[in-house]
Amino acid sequence: MRIGITGEKGFIATNLAQKIIKQGHEFVSLDNADFAKRVMDYTLSGEVCVYKNSVKRWTSLFELLGLDCIVHNAAVVGTDVVALNPRHAINTNVLGTQTIVEAANNCKMLIVYTGTTVIYDTYKYQETDILENSEIFPRTNYAVQKYAGEMIVRNNAKEWLVTRPLFAYGGVGDMNSLIAKSLFGVKNSIESIDMFLNPEKIKDYMHVEDFCENVMRLVDDGVRNEDFNITAENPHTTLEIISLIEEVSESSLEGIIKWHPETDYLGNHRLSNQKFLDFMKTSATKTLKEGIKESWNTIKNDKSNYNPLKYLDQAKENKVDLKKFFPKWLALFRFCIVRYLSVVYRSKYHAKRIKKNWLSLSRVWCNVSKGTFKSKKF
Image 1 (cartoon, rainbow, N blue to C red):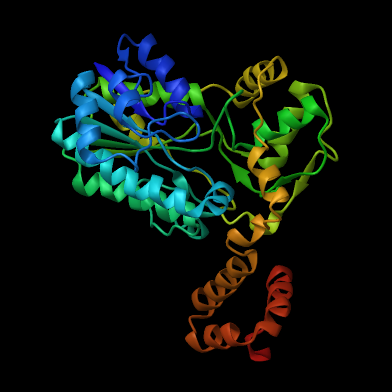
Image 2: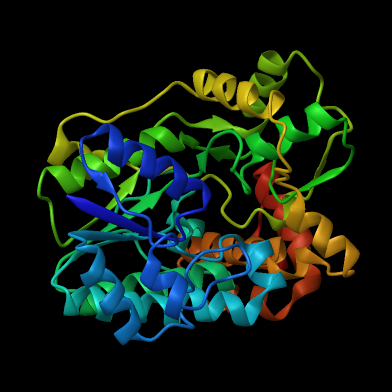
């Protein structure tokens, strides 16, 4: 197959291009195409822009390159990055997706959409794994835009796949993960890196190479018009992940990370890989320690201008408080209390009164945590 990737200079895309070649397919660069260089608009990062170019131009490019499949990977990724570039984010993540879908349909091509797992109503799945058919409730602008893009693909593309990586991480090129930012901080002795996570919550990181291999297995196997959460099913608390990073790098992260636990709206975020296993029987999965070792080796020896703290630095320079773009922890707190009252006491009366009486919330939390809650106080 001849396969192209939108946003081909991105972290997942560069790894996917290597996997495409290793599995015997032909990776076809969009950015280096003569037609694109002559008539198409590019982004500042040197990629063909998904929204500034018309459906007609994209159709012509796909036809001239003779593509069989387009992986739509171009996206503005992350709550913080979307907050810094809101118009560009919406245009890329939504309008750009519509454009690519229409062009792919014109060329009768398979479109593989790189989604995200933050679209789910994670508040409801703190103690259980999320499945593909779990309830959807995107709570950040990034999640809303990516879900809109996903539904454009699923509702309009003639032949499609949706693949959602769960915390894909790696070495150089990884601009988002806790692992990459921490290792970069260790290498460069950087202090107080803002980390929008609760260190006590559970996350499930998957190495980018494993994600890319699983995506290509779906493409090769002829699976079509299905959506998949692709995960390592190797969950750890964030503190356990930090311990592994310290062990691998032989360095302490004390003072390097500045936690913002109130912004961790995902909380425990674990997804089941069962649907993928039902289709493919096995899944490529490195151990977390193996993946961190590989990441550390590439970051430690990197001589480029790679900087995963780029957007955090940009926010500080522009005096943008990124915390305000995350769902407030207090909202989750209220949700949990109201749900507790409604379920345990089966009384809408108590729930309504708690909603109206914010001064009571701290007392409720204290009593519930101690097991001494008495509804008559409220």
